[in-house]
Length: 57
Image 1 (tube, rainbow, N blue to C red):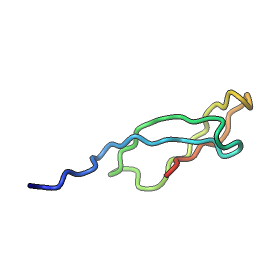
Image 2: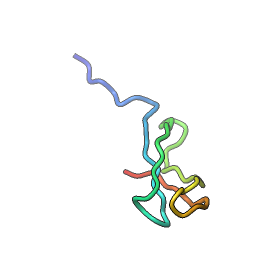
Image 3: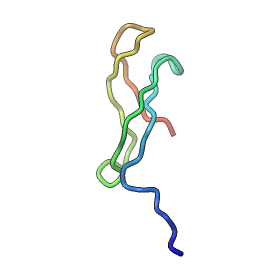
């Protein structure tokens, strides 16, 4: 039987870099188009400002 692949589109967790553990977002990523880790500015409720969020392992 053939081995099942992980898939092209995977779900990733984005975590705040300024205050780790306080803000997390879930999003999807196409692994064929985007090979590096995602970095986005997202809103952190506890800090009440937009901060940089990076993809966790």
